[in-house]
Image 1 (cartoon, helix red, strand yellow):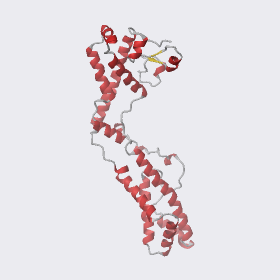
Image 2: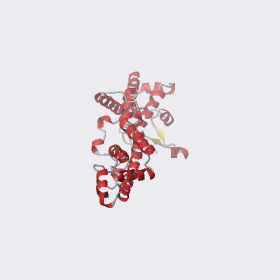
Image 3: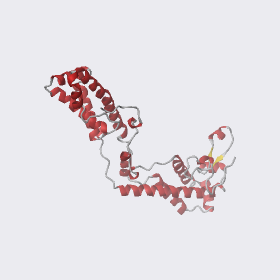
Image 4: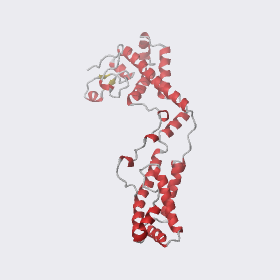
Length: 299
């Protein structure tokens, strides 16, 4: 007997077997909120420290042109600014952004068709075909044909089902013709089946038949991601170093302009200045703690 469908985890759109999980190499580098905050504040420092009110004082603390260039170098690598566009095309494709939504929509529509017409066809067979042969007829029609969980397997099962229905129309057996006529009367028309055939063809060709991303060796992608990750770590250390030094010599107002200190919105709204040290230790919740080597928060 065909497997009964249920609202189990295997039927959920996000469910996937272990064999279909993308490898670590195929996953794009995704920046955390703390890393994006680091990039924003480092950029603010790199741009604003060049202004006349700040540059001379920073120089007296050892902030040289070489240190400035190093900050820009780390920032560009950490932000991915220097990565080739081909890398991004590949990461977007492998991350499922290009085809994921469309492919899942098509799979869900095909799965809905399967959920609707497999049980209807079974019930129609058992009503239309004479009792003495309906078991054999049902077994023949559904031989090696079972409902599948939402996923790629429905492409094969629904394709087989459509061919079986087409076979009913061509068969000279009177009961086969009765079953086909009843299915058509209930809504499984040639137009409806053609619609599903087109959906299956799109799934087989690739959702939406999008252009294939450029080929980039996996080793090259992995090396670029590793370099970007290392640059993020280097930029965090560079920023924490200079944030610790420059906070000691600039006013709170100047620190805010340079991205060294963030003023909490709630306190600012109340007219109270409260300094918040940068959450640059890699923890998205770091806004409540201190950065290694930095001054404690001022209350």
